[in-house]
Figure 1 (spheres, protein in one colour):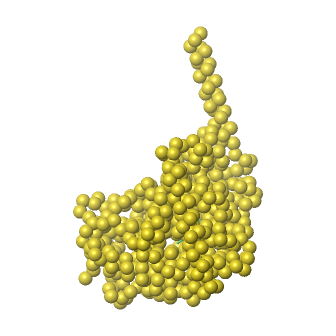
Figure 2: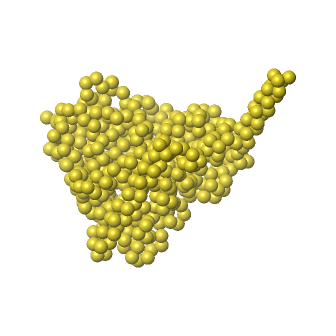
Figure 3: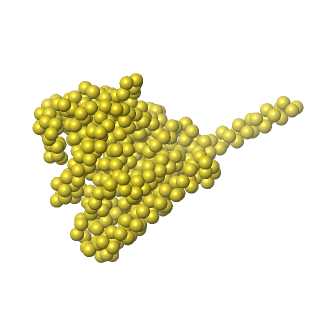
Amino acid sequence: MIVLTLQLAGVALLAVFIVSIIKSSVRPANFPPGPLSLPLIGYVPFLDVRNMGRGFDKLSKRYGDIFSVFLGKAPCVVLNSYPMIMEAFSMKEFSGRPSIFSGTFFQKGKIGITTTEGTNWELQRNFFHNHMVELVQGKGTLGFQDLILDEVHDLKMDLAKRVGEPLPVSYRFNVSIINILWTIASGRRLHSQQQEFQSVYECIDKITQFMSRAAIMSFIPLLSRIVPERISKMEKGRYHRDRFLNISKKWIREHKEAYRGNRGADLQDAYLAKVEEKAESFSDDGLGALLREMFVVGAETQSTMLRWAVRILSVHKDVQRLVQDEMDELGGRNHDIVWEDRHKLHYTRATIAEVQRFADITPTGIPHKTVCDVDFHGFYLPKGTTVIPNFTACHQSPKYWKKPLDFYPEHFLDDNRKFIDNKEGFLPYGIGTRRCPGEDVANMALFLILANFLNTFSLRIPPGDKREIKTQYEAGTGFIRNPKAYKVILQERE
Ligand code: HEM
C-alpha cells in the first residue's frame, strides 16, 4: 500500500513537472520554434551563458536560422545567419532595446544611447555618431590622428623600457585608449599618474567586472534579489557606479565653468551648446550618461580587441613578419604610420580585420527588441519581443570563410591581395539602425595603434608558453569575449 502511494505521488509529481514545463514553453501563436523550457529560468541551464553563440549554433541545426529560446520567463528570438541579421536589423521595427539589467543598473535607469529607444535614443545617437564621424572623416581628422599618434608615441616610450622581459600589456593599452576617449570628451589629456586618471580607470575596470558577473541577471532578474551579496558583489557594483556618476557630474560642472560657447569643439562643448539652446532631450544628466557610456563601452571593447591582437600576433610570427615587411616597403621603421597609409597597407588591414573576426568579441551583440508587431519570414513577433543576433554564426560560417576556425588574414584579401572592405559575413560592429556609433573612431585607433606598435616592436611568446589562444570570461561585460591573461616579450626591431 505504501509503495503504491509513493508510486502514485511520484507519478503525480512527474505530471506536475511535465505540465509546468509545457506551460513554461508556450510561445505566442506562429512564433519561431525552439526547445522546451524550465519554469522561471527557461533554457538558461542548458546554455553556456558566457558563450551563447556556440549554444545557439547547435540549436540552429535543429530549428533553422530563426528560432526562439526562453531566457528566463520570456521567449527570445535568435537570428542565426548573416542574411537574417542584416535584413532584420536594417528594419526600424527591430530597433528597440529590452531592459538589460547590467545596462540599466550601470546607468541608474534608461538614459544615454544603449539602453534607450524612440526619439531620445535617435537624437542622442545621431548627435554622438555625427561627432565621431566628424573626428575621423571631417575637418577634425588630422587633429584626431595627431592625438592618437601622441598616445602611440607615449605607449612605445613606456614599453621600450620593458623590452626583453615577459610583460602583461593590457594596462598600458587601457591607458592609451582611455586617454584618447578623454581627449574626445574634454579636449585634453590626462596623465596616467594623476589621481583622476586612476579613479576613472578603476571605475571602468570594476564596473565592467560587475557587469560581467551580473550578465545572467539580465535574463533572470529575480537573481538580483535572491543571490547573496558575497556572490553578486552588488554593493561594490553600486559603489563604483555611483563613484563614476559623481566623477562625470564633476567633469560637467568644471566644463561648464570653463565653457565659453562651443569653441573647443570637444564632445562636452558640443553637447553643452545643445543644452543651452534647449534642444529636445539634451540635458546635463544626458551628457553624464553619454560620457559614462562612451568610457565603459568604448574603452572595454577597444582594449579587449588590442589584447586579442597582441596575443594572436605573438603566436603567429609568420603573419607579424608579413605585416612588418609591408610597412618596411612603405617607409621604414622611423616612419610614423598615418591613417592615409591604410590605402597601401592591404595585408595589415586584412590582419586587423581578421583579428576582429577571429576574436569575435561580442558573440551575441547587445539584444534588440521589436518596437511593434512584426511579420518576419512567415513568423509573428509581437511588440516587445527580444531579438538576439548570433554574430559567432556569421564569423565562423564556412559559407563566408575558407578556414573559419583558423587565424587567416587572407580571408580579407582578394585575388590581387587587395583588402576587401565590407566583407560578407563580417559584423564586428553589428549592423543597421543600432550599428556601433563608435566604429569609425575604433577603426582609426586600432589601425594607428597596432600598425605603429608592430612597426617598432616584434612580439614573442615567453619560454614555456603553450601557444594556445584561449578565452577567459572572468573580466569583461559578459557580452564581451576576453582573451585569457597572457604575457608577451617585446623586441625592438632592428
Ligand atoms: C573594437 C571596438 C568596438 C566594437 C567591436 C564595438 C561593437 C559594438 C556592438 C556589436 C554594438 C551593438 C550593436 C547593436 O546593438 O546592434 C555596439 C554598440 C554601441 N557601441 Fe560599440 N564597439 C566598439 C567601439 C566603440 C566605441 C569606441 C564607442 C564609443 C566611443 C562605442 C559606443 C557604442 C554605443 C554607444 C553603442 C550603442 C548603440 C545603440 O544602442 O544605438 N563602441 N558596439
